[in-house]
Each structure stands twice: as C-alpha cells, then as structure tokens.
Length: 108
Length: 117
Image (cartoon, rainbow over all chains, first blue to last red; front, side):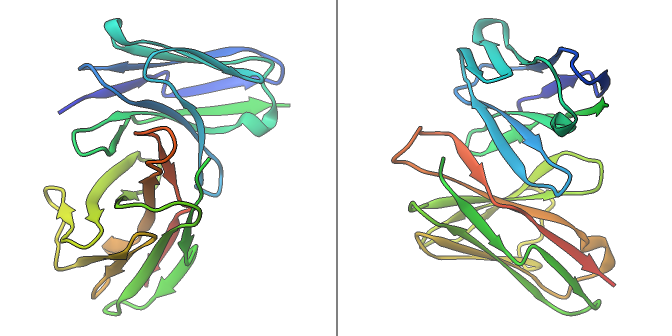
C-alpha cells in the first residue's frame, strides 16, 4: 500500500518563527489533505491539496504530485499553532492514509 | 466545510461491557463513513469502512464481531465495541465525505475517547 512519511517528527519553534513541514508519499494519489490535531484530539482540516498551491492566512501548502511530496508552511508561528500536523493521502476505498505526524511546539 | 459530529466524546466503562459510539453527518448525506482508531502518540489507523445499507468492510486485523458497525441511514453510523477490554482503550474517530462538496475531501468528527477499566 501507499506509504506516507512526514518530517520532521518533532519541531520546537520560538513564537514568530517560520517553519516547513514535509510529506512524502510512495505512489501517485488523487487526494491529499493536511490536518492539525488540537490537544483535545480534534482533527482540523487545513488544506485539501492533491496538487498546486493554496494559502489560508499564515498557512500555505504546496503539493508537487509528479515528485510525490507536499509541503506545509507556517509563518509567524503562534503558541496556538502547537499540536500535531498530519498529512494524509487518498486510499483505494476513498479513505485517507495518514503519516505519523509532526509534533509542533511553539514556545512564547 | 461539512460537519461531522460524534457522541459521546468521552466514555469510561468496566471491562466486559459494550459501548456504542455514534457518528452523524449534520449537514450532508454520507453513503460511506470511515472509522479510525488512534492510540496515544500514534497516527490514525483505518478500522473499517461503513456503507449505508450494507455490511461494513473491515481492515486486516480488526475483529468484525468485536467492533460492530451499523450504517442504517445516510446521516448516521454507529460503532459498538462489544465486551470491551482495557486494550480497547483508544481514541475512535469517524469521518465522511460530502459528495455535494469537494469530492474526496474527508471531514472528521470530534472523536470519542474510550477508557476501559
């Protein structure tokens, strides 16, 4: 099956810093989503981005489908950005296959 | 985006009892819903695919007789953990896609944290 690898596994930032999270996947996909899991466990949809570039406020994402990777950019990080960021790609049943996540800690 | 709601958000039960978790699509119809499980500090793993009006399909290693799934309507799927044991303690999350929106984009419920004593 499709393998999804995220890096780095852990990231500690000072408030105000920028960061880039990476997601590599092993096969072509027709669906890729980025999520933020908050401390209560809820998954927040950040981007649906099987290809191209999107921006939403301080967050942006780029997927280069032909090279099988996606990047999530966080600019001017805030403490509320802390949590785990998951990349997930489309599976054969319409489900999502998740990477192991990047745990982000933003210090004040 | 589409809204998926789960209930209860947190449940504590004794070993040997059964627990039912509900997953509802609030503003759209979902012919298919997905149930995931997440152990502490781990990623989400697909347990089963819930299909409205038909039997669920389970991932390898997931016991269908232990995790009963019922998708009786286009807005409700239920997961029943039967004869729960401490090793079933986990975070259970459902998801669905709104076919009237961006096809393929999945939305997730708030999750249900099960603790079996």
